[in-house]
Image 1 (cartoon, rainbow, N blue to C red):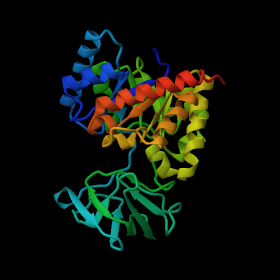
Image 2 (spheres, rainbow, N blue to C red; image 1 turned 180 degrees about the horizontal axis):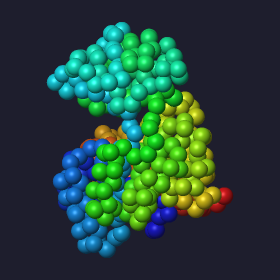
Image 3 (cartoon, rainbow, N blue to C red; image 1 turned 90 degrees about the vertical axis):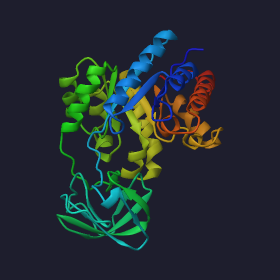
Length: 338
């Protein structure tokens, strides 16, 4: 049965072997996501080569999607690469790199001191660790740990609505984009896309690839029509989006992004926690089954697996389950037209 909804899978150490890639393609994988935030260039090059070889052997079209890091805000470094933050402890976030300390580190991008208020939440590592801002200065945020745990170098940090992002591409993104173009990828995804000019910056350097804008901030939602006009497609990156806007607003935001793409005949993707429990378990939860079905019913052009295939216990089985869920949903509901 042919599907109108594609399956995109992220490869990692557990799934980069030739045997596993062959199993993934046989199970229904349509696109391989290469995360430019992780892995070495040698690994990405080897993975791309294996994907091309296996797709040819199986006479299947399997495309490559390079996911650029974008303006992801990250923590700086710690002594020995990590630290342990306990509830109630004080943590200082600085605007510039400094000496290594277990409870003081810096952020990639500055905050707007006028928009950042005392009591604001700071989410570390997709919300695994939560800080509360106690004092706001232009060069430092004094915080207290609300939800503690282990933190390591370079973990993502989100200060909802308070971070100042410069326009355009970072130097790293330009470098990664050139590498991806040389690999011959069919598509590039730009993290934290917020305005049409972000797409233009990518297209100027890689005019022959499809450019997907990742929607994961309030600014992206405010500029949604312009983003949908400029990009070849949009991805609802629910993980970071749910940290930047109230999580109860995410379903409506997802529907708005899919609707904007359908109306313009553009590609659309839904990402984050698609079959999250299957990183460990062999069966999806009922909530995940319903989530996949509703995404398909809403007209999503593709569903993106990350940890499920990147480091989960049974990546091939996950793709097989997702394919079955998509096929059933497409059988039950006709294509969406706006």
